[in-house]
Image (cartoon, rainbow over all chains, first blue to last red; front, top):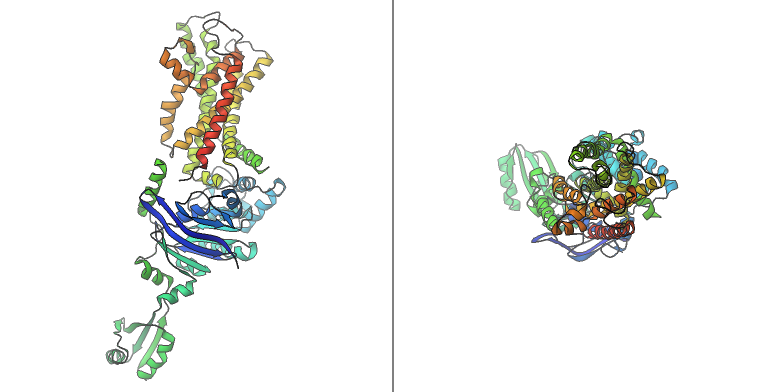
Length: 325
Length: 255
């Protein structure tokens, strides 16, 4: 498969602040690509460059084979965007918002109605088409924006934190719609997210921190890369079991809630030996694979959390810079 | 074709919002009425008729200019709202020329503004002005051109401001002086040299002067227009082109 997005040594500085620092990556056509990172890591800045709303300081970016700096017009035709903050006109109806988009993206007049209604049906909002957007819930607005992003049949759909601030039910609804995109519409999805269960679904992930990509791969590969599985074991005599394990492997198991726990490289090949050693005394044994959260914690030293309001200082700095220039 | 539709749909959006928001129509119509019937009525007691023209009649073209000024600037300033509420991103990310966006926005202001100006213009019999049909049509045509130039000027202004709070700054330090120095309330030629220069740099001056040319038949005396209609229109058209070009450049710029 070919790369529909290509980023080479991309850097973006706002005054003294380096928001994106020499990043490179490819996104395959027809895949779901996730951009994972803490607040202020450079996710939105990268999306804005790819969407031609911002010029990079250096480096190059291509979408659909077009240069984001030199051929912004062609790039704009190839993409749909769902921004982090709502960009709907609340004083227009759902239908009007979508029809506006269809016209301004060059959908022929004859097709506007059909495409708009198809898109509304796809996200389950056709029966609300003549309602003003200000009467919509957060989840409905998000779905409406996804529908809008698809009207002109883009090759790539950018989703910046699409489920931020939505209740679980709306998240599930929206997520179902997103998952259908590559197959049903042949759309490549490029998204940023904070939710691990969403990141799990992405074909490939790039983890970004302080403007740099610090790891990339499929969720499985990333988890494998940090390796260690955690084994939990409960025996009739934990103290002597612990002594045996220490003696045999040099590991120092901890005891927690009546279970001994320790990390190993590959749990499935360690467990048979363990059972043999502790023959007859094992009451239960289980192990856990690392989660993406563990991967993230290990690589960045931070837990991943949804954007907090008070944590927007970098955003403020970027805004202030853009105002001055 | 896509450029044409972009302009069309931007104008359509503005008109839809204008129709839905009745209070905006009422408040923008209230201002010229207050000036015409309260300020004008008072001052006409102080200023005796010159060359047979009462003061309320003299300020009528100026009041039309005021309607255009406030309504056009207000409409263009809505770009700041669009920035604040994110809708501008939706427009800027679209595959259309930046100049189409600016022209669409200017025409939005022009349309809304011209509608209101026509409403005020129809009050001419109330203040005792006699207009022929030709004069009325010419005045509407001139209003359209003036509204376009002021709307495009408003867009240039809007590109400098990020938030809604700047609205009062624009109103007090740009729009009000533009109104007073436009010749709306008194002939520009009465001003001292520095103010006359300021007035000659004011795009609205030529708009108000053009409206005086179409509304009045008198061509000499202290209350007559300062320039010929041809000169006024030339300035209006050239400044419109300039403002659209400048605003398009600003929209092209990306941090």
